[in-house]
Length: 191
Image (cartoon, rainbow, N blue to C red; front, top):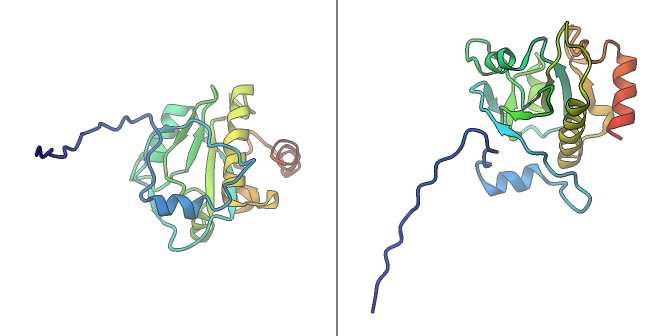
């Protein structure tokens, strides 16, 4: 009789891959609305931020859209700097790349309101004063990740909000200067 020893293989996690959920039960709970017709999660580059907290039992009910007010590299650096105390779940670059900084199951610090943060997913879209609006690739990526979030968590279109609806700010004014433009885009692209 031969006895085989079980060996554990060590795998190195690449920094540009999707981070696995903490537990499969968490994934099932968070993706309660998965089923036929559900939008797939688009490819993301995992670039973790230390700036996050527990949702403390709150459920995801809102999607809050932002603009970065700067190019990708300094924006990612700020969102990952512990001294800044800010983050977002996703950042959509002008070339269409999507970065995930905080797991959906955790609270990102993006809206300036603790309760809204605990109940929402925050997406930053790279735009600033000399690079306003979105590129075609960026818009396509934003629509893709936003539809995934809406369908995965059963968020209604009325709960897709600009940052300025939560806190006095112009954000995301470099993309949607007015609420009318935001609502028009949201209704035409996400419904």
